[in-house]
Length: 75
Image 1 (cartoon, helix red, strand yellow):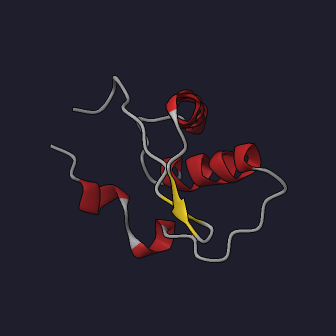
Image 2: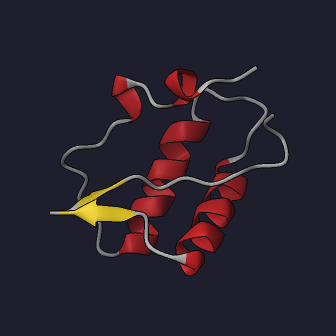
């Protein structure tokens, strides 16, 4: 079973990400996560993150956010 610690690694923690928009930031994040997860496409992650953000922002404050989504391909 995949655990959060397997996904949220130091390499995937972006503390100075520069993006023109929230959408672009989510796209960059999706690509970062999909880099070493062979069975998941960046496009699927991005679509999930966009759908989740439509329900409500995952921003905490001061430019900090914890984007997350559920994917059918992950238990």
